[in-house]
Amino acid sequence: MAALKEPVKIFIVQSLACFETPQQVADAVMQRFNIEIDRRQCENYDPTKYAGRNLSKKLKDLFEKTREDFRKNIFDIPIANQAFRLKEIQKMYEDAGKNKVSKQNLLKLAYQETDARTTKQEITGPDGGPLQNENTTYVTASKELVRQVMDELESKY
Image (cartoon, rainbow, N blue to C red; front, side, top):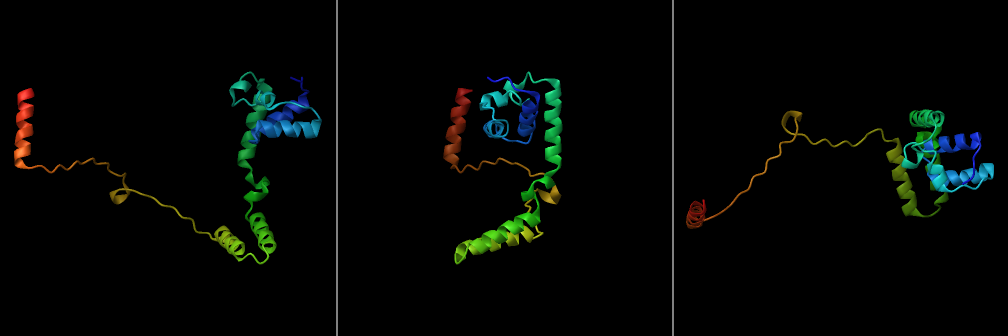
């Protein structure tokens, strides 16, 4: 296990806080810093995992702040932007050529992307109240069968 310098540790913590997998982070460390580490070593820098339970307070705070910022600021992620998604759908539509099935699916996808309606199904009981759970068992029996069962029960108890 290689001893890591502070910038590498910060990079690992921030990458894990942005929901990258330990393997993705290990690969990124190799590309960026030319340091080979395995995914188990990366897990040591994730305070949400058992392996990261002994992470320093400074790095834990950095992890929490980075994760909070990441969750709040989805506009930095291109695919979260409708214009970006429509542009990508347009590129795929142009690349589809004469494939009518693919083009039809892309048109449907673009329609769904721009349609402001949402489908929400809500199941409630009378007047919007909660559903009432009732378990009812129906038994069909002749009078003779009922009399026989009752006699058996009375003799046992």
